[in-house]
Image (cartoon, rainbow, N blue to C red; front, side, top):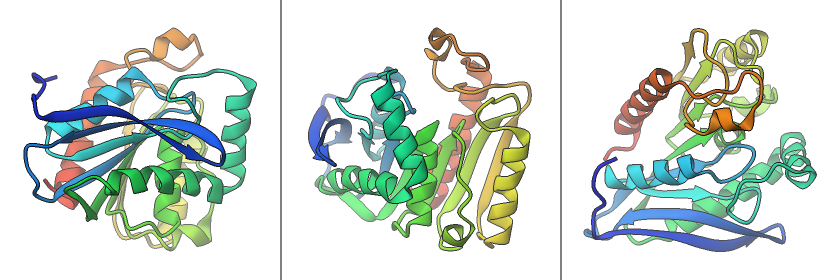
Length: 246
């Protein structure tokens, strides 16, 4: 990562959604008041990670106003029953996921210089699901990038509302997105006549390949893979440049 810009504002932002105390991570360059494209970052299913914070700061260094929302609580990682119960609730009821996404997006767009007409979403694991739910839910977003997404619930009718460009980066050996599930997603996007979507598939790669700390979880099929992390990041940046700038 490049040397930190002294005018870069990096801070944790506390807020509340559904009675839960959330802590997001904001990064924005205050050197200019000019409008800049915005990127909402959605963390993995087990909570806010160092990787997501660093990604948010890297996006700000590239000229984006970036905010990593919190949809679990406390701005931390957790592997407990309460966390998984919240994930289950959001998977079963997309309005819950969309509500938490909207709260994070509101904080991002309240920042001086954040351009509400140029919004993209980057999501990891369940964060990728949240990004797609935003596109399905009619949010004004131009692009959604998902890295090793969790199981994407089929919502054919909702998918017909997608106007954003979609990029999903998936490993062939991901236990949380099987080949059949990936093909089902492809078919749903085709049937919904989504205009611009793509799926990048990484051969022999599992879940969590972008996060250097993934292997510490000790879960089968979850491991960091640097080449795939770098390739998917380049693809993400190319789509951001194409759809929102800077």
